[in-house]
Image (cartoon, rainbow, N blue to C red; front, side, top):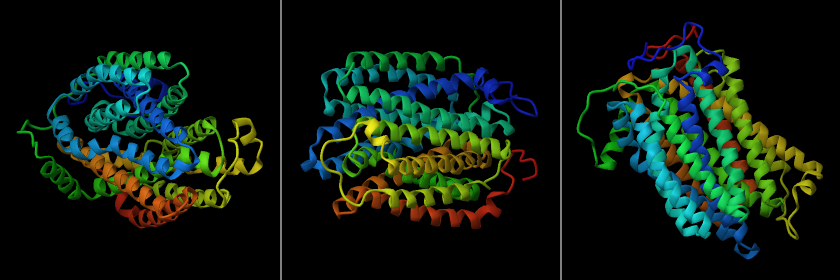
Length: 448
């Protein structure tokens, strides 16, 4: 039994289908999946509006504004995560999730209005508030997993959450393309409202949990609270090293995802459908890599796949640079069929898939180590510290991307730099493996 009275799996744990069908995991999975869909429908619609609303003369402006929009979404993670972690440790996490899902309903109503009006300014405002809600949800959805799952189910549970999140990103992206193309805007506006209602409804079935820590006065000094949760995390070697690895994943991912529209249009000369193809390959690749990692490790809590994932990201990134055209694409934009008719483009698609699968193999064990090695009374705050550092990394990625683009670095050049740096990260984790293999606090590791 968990602290909240939820019956967990037996010694062998549940399989993927059984876990998804169980009340202790299914409603949480569905609620976070639906919310991730809506977040990405609005966010990607805005990005595509920027990328394809600009002509060739405004290319650099669009390339700078796109990561700026991404930074606007993640800024609240830096500002709000510490308070979110404190709340999550001191209250029933399921109840807090339900409250957040309820507030998403009026927010998606505002997003639907922005879609129907075609207002980029309104969607930017909605995007920032969505970031605030996501910042409060982040510590909850990861910290609640050890309360609901057996230790040997944590790897599979995290793999399913990561896979589901990236599939939701894909579906949200497709909806975003429809919004940006002004095709069926009213239908898509209605859809995001229905999804918000469904997310709240499913959240009602998440089992209650007990507070992990005694209540204390909330720290509303955001900078002091942020410094405190980071300092607490830094005193726990395994969780903190996991946080640094997770943050690198999101930093590198932010570079790729923010630049796909510009890369497709200005480097490869492809239409919006090619952007959708790239995002499809990338998101499904991460989902595949997450599930593959769960199968490789067989429920064991270990970081042994982490350096191999980093090496894969680095090597495929370098090959992506080698496969990219050296000149900026000109003329009319190619449709999807014409794009796929070019043999060299299949190499690019293969590289994107390799990067994404490697990313899934890299990230899942780090999330499990973070959850399992953190003391239960501090788990949500450790995840909050992770979200703060993740956000800082993505802000740095956005600023560095804007600076490098402004300095004349091409988008393929950004991919090369990211890949080379990830090879270094892989080497660091290779050296850290003996320390990361230590048995996490309060968890079973099957001897590894």
